[in-house]
Amino acid sequence: MANAFDVIVIGAGTGGYPAAIRAAQLGLRVAVVERRPTLGGTCLNVGCIPTKALLEHAHALKVAKEAKTWGLVLGDQPARIDMAQVQARKDKIVTILTRGVEFLFKKNNVTWIKGSGRIAGPGTVEVTGDQPRTLTAPQIVIATGSHARGVPGIEIDRARIITSDEAIALREVPKSIVILGSGPIGVEFATVFKRFGSDVTVVELLPRLVPLEDEAISVELEKSFKKQGIAFRVSTTVTAARAEAEKVEIDAKLPDGSSATLAAEYLLVATGRGPVTSGLGAEEAGIRMDRGYIVVDEQFRTSVPGVSAVGDVITTGKPGHPQLAHLSTAEGIALAERLAGKEFRPINYDHVPKCTYSDPEIGSVGLTEQQAVERGYDVRVGTFPFGVLGRARIANETDGLVKIVAEKKYDEILGIHMIGPRATELVSEATLALRMEVTVEELIRTIHAHPTMAEAIGEAAHATHGAAIHV
Image (cartoon, rainbow, N blue to C red; front, side):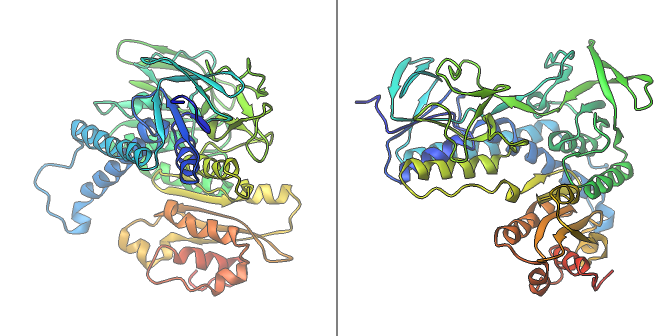
């Protein structure tokens, strides 16, 4: 039957499309229901890829503005950004990558069904859209992802009070912008708009920027933001926002209990993302939910037999399931292999790397120092600054450090945290070290090439044993 499959995946984001491809590789007949006109979900269309494209343009502008430092002769006019060209190139990148996923579907015989999917009963998905139809399969995978979440009392009008969806599409550089939230989305856009020429203020409810990172990372980011002229207010609550024709007025409660009013051309609400489950029929199907998220076990099974879920839409019952594209992909692949009868290998969520593409970049994996202490470890740490490295001096990117968190008894590495040049690339070595249960001593004995940014990891290992060579 044309509408009968082995697996139906609802959602073609970074959890859904890898799950579909892997399941098809393993011989299953797979259909993917996706309501966007393009594949790839939030990440490829309005998230990871377009924001990182903007960040690369911001970095290029930074280098151009420092042309004299590099001995570059660019002309008499100061470097500036052409937003029309930036948006055109960003859109081209997105198109190439989303079409790439479409090609992979064709190559692996994955059926793409355009429309919105709703669970209509055991093994049944109803698709609404231009071509309504009913699909059947013994296994259904929910991978509907997340959406930009608002703040109670603040109406997002998508004109002056915006989310990241609108921020990536701005055709002019804002003269000023207030960013509510200092997680990865908030500080990345702070970097973009400051480099482009905006006056930027970041407002954070908690006592420090990037509050989920190790405290040492927050301290370094705050130092760098001050140097760059990015204003920030921590321990500050936004209580109201009023959009006007050409500006937004924002009421805030300051740490001392006093009130202040901020004004800017735009208010970007970057306070996190919520699950996409509206219209899915999950609750009606009997699926256990928690604050809108779908509850799953370690094998991504929901409370309903034959229905699984992965990615941003799930909660594992433990606090803080990360909403990360690469984690969604890992979950999707692991689930597909289980559905095909392969051995299931649970994901160690302590070993999921986190990347923030601000300037300076942040990369981290494993436990923070505070988390390690809270879990009862006898902790020792080592840090090493990027500014000491020859490669960092050559690149003129000297802010930041690498910090290693280890336990004393067995010399086990519990976490590696870094802020500085290429941190989002260097974190892969750190992730492998945790995955392979490398000790600090083994990391010390691993020869790091010179001159590289990666030397900072080896030097931080030396520092953890109280024997740093170059500082």
